[in-house]
Length: 310
Image 1 (cartoon, rainbow, N blue to C red):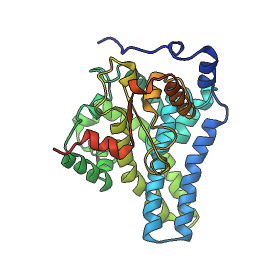
Image 2: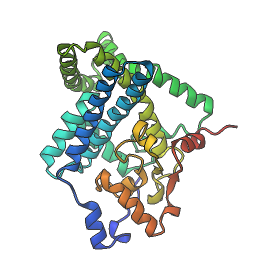
Image 3: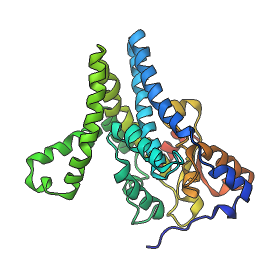
Image 4: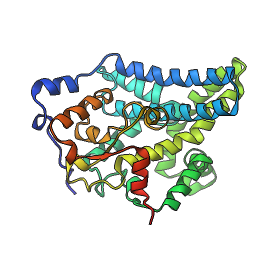
């Protein structure tokens, strides 16, 4: 199928407005990456000083959300919008954001740009994430349970190692790509483990890095994927290739960090840096375009929409 219809920014904005929206920043991407790691570190400190089940569970949720935040910032780098200097942009995306959580900017970029080119069409590599919706509440609950009990993490991050014992899998291109990317993830996490052990906090690495990665991070990643593309248009209308979801502060803290909820705007104008997407949303509202867009009234409302009760 042909690529989806694109909207030219000048069809909506005048030259000055578009210049302000598309301007790149030398410091915002560095700040957001530092913020993600800073929140993770602060969460560890809070649990160390106030050790109890409530602070631990909150820390797991906050850290898992910032792990998603690192993935979001890697996604930003895939579009070249995390930093105006390409070498710095790619270094931040690959080594500071992607590799610690087992993602590779180099492998992700061509895959993701194909998603934008063919959004919601058969050639969209992410179509499988949204095509299964709408679904039943029971099916959605089963997915949530698999995420929170570590089953999703095991399937994605542990099970691939079983390919070593299957000659056919071992020779596959997918397994070879996994082997090429995995040493960087292992090296990053080995370094984190050594720092934690060296400072006398070895259990914190397991409880406050691996546990969030194995539980809350898969869940909020799923919620992100559902909110962005489940039950939207077929890609023919640029305004309905993705959904924007209104996010209160609690959503931004525990589900949707770093402006990821403005996904309709991102698909409309994928070369805008994420921190300018709220301004794009406001500008589209002033232009009377919100009624043309898919806008969810919070993540709970979106989940009810994609898994309605019969």
